[in-house]
Amino acid sequence: MALKPKQVIDTMNEYYEMYPACAGRSIHKFGEEASNAYSASRKIFADFLNANRPEECIWTRNATESLNIVASSVKLPKGSKIITTSLEHHSGSLPFIERAKRDSLMVEVIKAQPDGTFDIEDWKRAIDNNTSLISIVHSSNVTGTIAPLKEIVELAHDRGALVMSDDAQYAPHHPLDVQAFDVDFSAISIHKMCGPTGMGVLYGKLEHLESMNMCLYGGDTVRDVRFEKGIIIPEYLHPPEKFEAGLQNYAGAIGAGAAAEYLQSIGMHEIEKHERALLEIAMKRILEMDSVHILGTDDINIKTGLVTFTVDTVPSAHDVATFLNDEFNVMVRSGWHCAGPFHYQMGIDPKKGTTRASFYLYNNIDDVKVFLEGLTSLIEISS
Amino acid sequence: MPDLSKNAQCVLKILGSGNSFTTTEILELARTEKYADICTDCAGGDAFVAAANQLVELRRITKKFGKGGYRWQLAKD
Image (cartoon, rainbow over the protein chains, first blue to last red):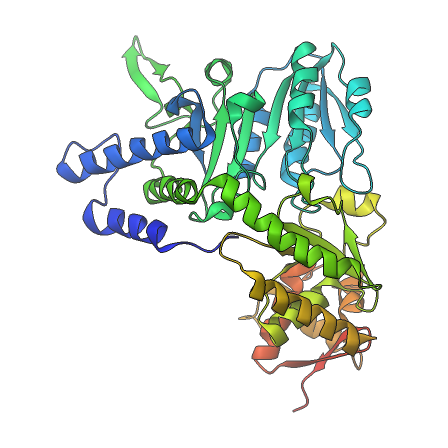
């Protein structure tokens, strides 16, 4: 969860205060303003991702919903294989595991290396002509490691497979160009990128979105609903409307656009550089601490600005998080980070979990120092 | 009790069964059959520990950090 800049809050307040109406429905002045802001926001977001066109960006509730839409609705041949990994967030694996169960598809799970990286040879071996879809986390929310997405997409497309990239952790911290990566789908979480909670984006190449089944049916998804000879005959709209049934979170979508605009005004390369500078300082000191063990690679060039670790003298990560919060006002995340399989793979009891410290554009070196001071104090007291 | 979340009720029930417990001990007990009816949200532990911290604020329980981490116990009347 990222902090929210004033620009985002002001933009959302403006919607509620100045033109609180439904987009695409009401013909009054407020409705027109809401419609304009809603579609302008989609355009801003499409530019943020370098999507080919705004219609390729679907507003969702969160990245989980984006992943579920694809998992439940993309057309996959009978008997084909889905590939996912042991590093996925539960939202990146479970929707596809359940889809496979539903349609009797095969699933292959590629095991991440202990440092959270992938061996490209594993992908070359696993992706075959029967592979229909790959669900992969671009940047892990646990280890922060960045997957070799471009290589994997090339391998997948050579074999005719689609790639669903979980960009929830990547998009807020790195420049994301969906056309350059050539992914078929991308799931994005807005609350991690300075935007409102309860908002996500599903990016999909238009041809795929066009061919996919709908998930929800109802208002705002139809071109026409005729009634002939006692039968109701619907005619549905194209993307994005076909995936945005019912009244939408207009303030959220407008806020998402404001967040994307805010990040772009700073520059994604600058944000990435800033985070890595802070990460380098933190990692260097942590690596000197004998009783602290980093989960994931220590190569900051293939890492998002986060460090996840365990502490020998404090078995429960929740205790680490509670201590840092109570004594140093440092807020970190503890637990299994919705990534049970990788914790089990690494022999880490999910009940004890791991602690994750994340750095973002608003953090500075003083924040890192306080965090390291807190960690040092925790070790001293608990030893 | 009914106004407390299930997680908070579970923490109180576990702490009521002994003198003091570590965080890991509480989470291990929460996953046992004995507490299955009210301890439903303990898989990752974070929501559970958040509930315990709320109980500290309500002065229903206490926590103390020392060797090995926190120990939790019911507040003395």
